[in-house]
Length: 109
Length: 328
Image 1: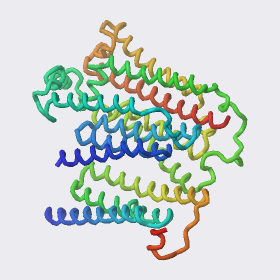
Image 2 (image 1 turned 120 degrees about the vertical axis):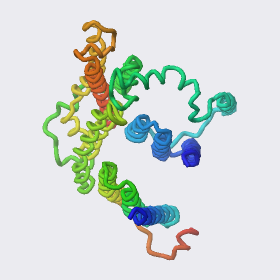
Image 3 (image 1 turned 90 degrees about the vertical axis):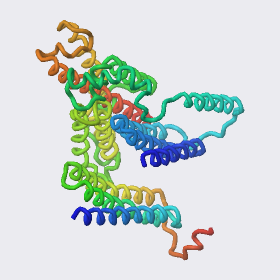
Image 4 (image 1 turned 180 degrees about the horizontal axis):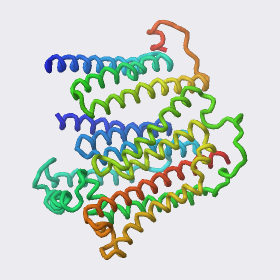
């Protein structure tokens, strides 16, 4: 049982790390603000869920896991809200999405 | 593992510092300085200094960023091109750096039990905390009781700094607080943005609750007045950002904030004087109750409350002083 918990928490942590990495990569490489935000929101949503669930599996049933759940809830509520506020601020500031076009052109511009 | 992680964090810290110096856009600089503080907080935590980490995260990364953004509204958003000769500055900085690096050769190894800092009064504090004060968090015992004078000094530094900033920014008493009914059609804060508002309202009680938890749990875990004051102030600043500054001033008018600034410092000093009147020394809490240990608990509780009240008052006053300047 302990080994099963270790393996699943290891899997969740690694998967969370992969999602955060993809989010970071997308935030760097995507062509305009909105697509970058879209990429970064993976870090907001999937990253904490997987990583904190992985840590909870390590912590077991204790006060620490309750605190971790509270942190997870907090992140799940605030992350999308921050994304929403950022997007509406960008829209208000007059940023428009670029027309969908091949990725390469967006970069070499 | 800790060493690798520490070196990693410190490297990021240096990179962030260079980026702050390089950035010409001040908004970018402010955001980077927030990241800098957060990295520093992570580093403190890695060194088992949870109390310091909490303070750095709450004040350095949280409130300072908000205050700097408030200051940014009043100034230009990009740095002026440097005009003076930078050679002298460069020489001074490089010399200081060399001296500091030379000084680190004399430092004891990290975690060395025979380091001078572990030979002086620290063992005595660790020994006596259980017997004389009997709270699990030695940091709070040292800050609140053993070195109560130093913390008193810190509170008065915060107090003086707050008063100084208020004078500099020319906070005018109560002008906005006593206005007529708030015109709800007038845009203030983020009143028209539904989602941040709803979520902000949802979070506010929890942030306040967490602030009080940090305040009163300081005896048992990381926390205390400085951190709690910053968290409570952050909750009210969040309210001001969402609902408009005038509504926040209705909840906590300027007069109340000034009262908090002075009142917290006053509580601290009064607890100290109470020690004298009850026959002990200044800031000796043992005489506050018939049982010396209970007296210590009571004294630490009261002075931490004083610290929290002053910090909340000062941070909110500075925030409102910046926000009021915006309207001229």
